[in-house]
Length: 538
Image 1: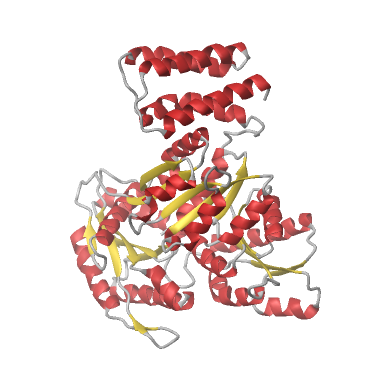
Image 2 (image 1 turned 120 degrees about the vertical axis):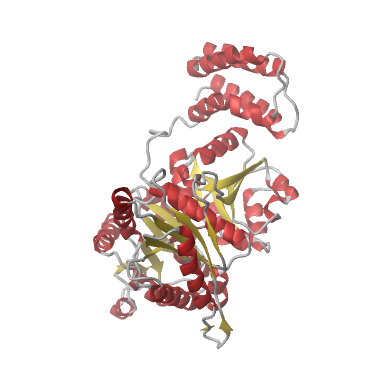
């Protein structure tokens, strides 16, 4: 970028900073002068596309000669111009707007290692191969991440300061065997004894350090291909012994066919165990798995033979009830709820506890056959059941077109108004946020964020996109305060960092950042990463 263009970008950023950070009305004349200046300067220095867009916006501005602009209106109006400046500033990015693979098609690798320098190196190398990599430095946090993320492959360093990698492997062993998650152990230990210990505990591969990266990638890919082959054959969830999501599409299409030909209506129910995360946190994931398996057993015993139970994800289940109206389905599922809530569980310490579930039921109509839309409607009724106090079933009214979505709160903390604007637009338009009611807030620095107390207002999940370098309070200080707060369990943090700040990345991983991405970044790559984080948020 030449010095004239750098000066123009700096001036544009300064003006946007002034307008977007202040809660003031912007006059028509101010906006016109701003666009007029860009139109002339950009065209003169050869930045033609910005000059033409500024002129186009000036022409549109003639329709609003008496208008006074709010910050939100201004941001929306100027977005086409702001995006041009964003892409020009990061013009070294190759194919910035290239289409990324669907989130379900990208393999997710979880790396557990307290050596943050190695974590960063492996993350960079493996992501160059097209995989999404979550790097976790704290082993306890990594175990929780495993259950939330459901990765396609896990890489564990045996020698860590806080605990032995074999202990982590042992803790995850049963779950990984049930879900056929390949595990690769890495170690400086070249002894046969250590290799044998790893294999006996269930490791699928053992790779000695120093790592030969080309061979390392081939061996990871081999494990991923093996897992894919097994997944393609499996229709049963190993833990709960009910169907998995691969069985959903064909079953749904069969029921739709019956509905069209014989007018046999059917109902979809979305069920979610109440306060399940608290059970995992209080009693451990092994006890949590027992709760899931028991729930599946009870629901199978209470339903008819032709009813279909699918583990939809985590502690969420779907029930397809053929030839059943919504009210009839509610009677059946209320009976299941009563039976399950009366069941007593025992923790490893001998403590007795019980669990309930909430559910939403939707009766499928001929005028709305789209599977995704119908699942969303059942899910919205599930959300209403949660809001109403849990442990109950809610129905979607027949022919209802207005349905509630789950809320998700996303905070963008960055001192650059161009970045804030681009990220807010990306999130609003993302396919990964379609199923949510979005509450997006932008903050120019950490002080403004904490002074707002926005993240303390309720117990719903929050995703914070946090720039590492900011005035007044930098991103690492914000991250540390968040992780020390009583709200930290429901806050997910994505760090935006510079490639030159390896020390800051290392510190962010140690402090508990859930993921990071280095600037300059592709927006579509960031969207995919945010999709994974949103997917794991409860």
